[in-house]
Length: 171
Image (cartoon, rainbow, N blue to C red; front, side):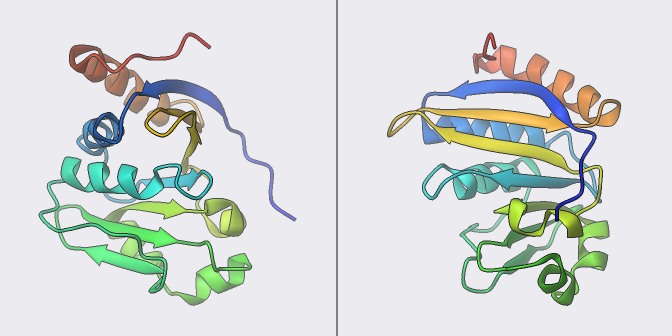
């Protein structure tokens, strides 16, 4: 049974292309710090790894970021580092804990794809990200989390994206 989260939708953005999805993520990456966690959800092909690639760029990670599907987790060094986890094949929070990623999560920005599979193992203050595929190119990115820090981060993201012309949804 998954624990209830005190989360609500904070912000939604429209992306018209993979490039724009990466720009949104890259801009968000510049606002994050070690210990931040993003719990990402979306169907296969929704753009979670595309988002991860942009996030890594925003964190100044100079490496090719690919899906960690077969290795479950990849760490990219930096200040902060980037920890990219794919929980698709994990069946329980215990399997996530068994990976021993707690220290790496404290020292990195962490993005967990298929986070719903291990939600009970994640910190309560993760930023939620739901990516919805609208068409071959278009996506809707919905962010949710607790107020306070995440509201501040997303307000800064909205302001930065307004200059890049990445529209926020009206909903």
